[in-house]
Length: 287
Image (cartoon, rainbow, N blue to C red; front, top):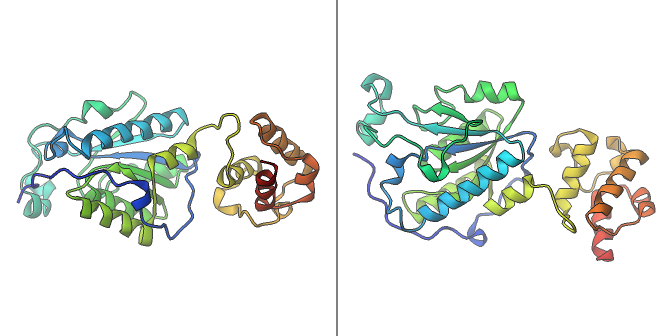
């Protein structure tokens, strides 16, 4: 009835991730990072010296550190010990009485003073917690999920988020599960039905300020959304930006910003071409 001992398995590489059905992009102004149930109790069912645990903890740290640097709130969930049977309810039928000790978040990924911590009672982090109300108050509608276990709480939280009109992003190499198969099945379900699967590196690229010479089609799209003060979803790379309100002043601002990081595109070319895709093609030719 309790959680079984979990055999070691190798962390899934990016090339094995399923193809996302949607092209959602993580927006630092709209997102929240959720560190899901990374308590000693749940990690004790693994051999913590073997994959996937060391990689999991390193990757979760990368995500949380990048999030804090980008001003993205980090929320932790943790289940309490010695739960009242009436409160625990049907969970007992599947998993027994639950935690009696080792409820602390493991020290490798411990919360910082500015982080938020919620007590968790059900598979989904939205059930019996203030998470949804708080996200609404903060006007954030993207949830980036890391932690354990993929096919139980993480998948349930992602499904709940989707049905609450919150975009869930599961970081595929910053979660762990009962097995490699369970891990992959979680990613496949999310990518095809309820959210988007990203890697740690993709998350960091989405939220990190770029240095010299770093630009991509998606980062150009993000820059345009920021300068127009619109949601990223409103910006299509093939759309005529004049119709979104892009004027010559904003074009000059973008040109100046990109020039500072070493992007070679002529201002006249930007003025004459009105889509992000055209600009990107010009950058590629110049390179």
